Image 1 (cartoon, rainbow over the protein chains, first blue to last red):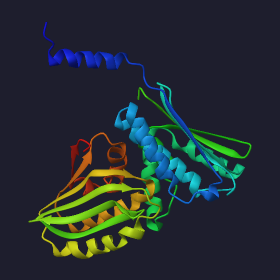
Image 2 (cartoon, each protein chain N blue to C red; image 1 turned 90 degrees about the vertical axis):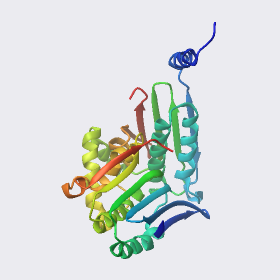
Image 3 (tube, rainbow over the protein chains, first blue to last red; image 1 turned 180 degrees about the vertical axis):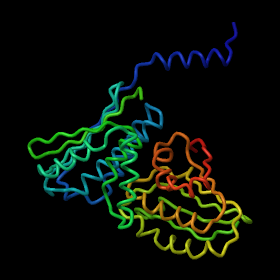
Image 4 (cartoon, rainbow over the protein chains, first blue to last red; image 1 turned 180 degrees about the horizontal axis):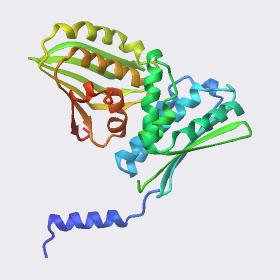
Length: 178
Length: 135
């Protein structure tokens, strides 16, 4: 019997559907943060883009790129203790893409982040907030304030945070089933 | 094809982003290519913005395409400079504008319309999207 291109396509589709989803994870821990002289967000984000892209569609790899960029940017722009470490983790367990960053933060700073996350609501609500925040901040070209909103509005992640022992962890989660 | 002006961002000694405004007859193309990741893109693109604002009023433009298809990434620090470039084009080009963007790129689908200010009817009525696949 002769195989046709259609048979191959059917086999490929079938094996792709049945294949277990890849588990992918890494942790980067750097410190003291005062020693970071290069572009840490870019280095970790582009690694995330390349790594996730090896196993998953580019749409998911791009989401990882955006989230890692914005969250690690927040770490390097908000260094409370120059001797402290920053930690970035990414994990895909076949069900969710989970990215978390941890750094030293005061109770006050953690409360602000929690309030920001609580204010984001659904992606549609976050999108309105993104538009409003851009309009408000643009005249002064104010830096910051957009990253977390973008992760929900644009990339449809769910955000949460936890603060203990003086360290704040912000977690972004995206279900692979969309 | 006449290059009207261009701007670029250098990082680590290499060009990582450039935007070019060029005229082919009466067709104006404004292209964005590369990645915007730096902290303050105005440091590199302010002269381009000024030149664009100075040059465009002298041109006869019948058709305009703003092309984001090769802009691979833009961090949130890059949003305002994108808005400024786009706003300059819309201010000086009187006709309709086609925006080329990548179909499966979250940033280009969700956030770019905000940066284009499509909430304003005067902008929305002049704007058409051309959806393309990632290159």
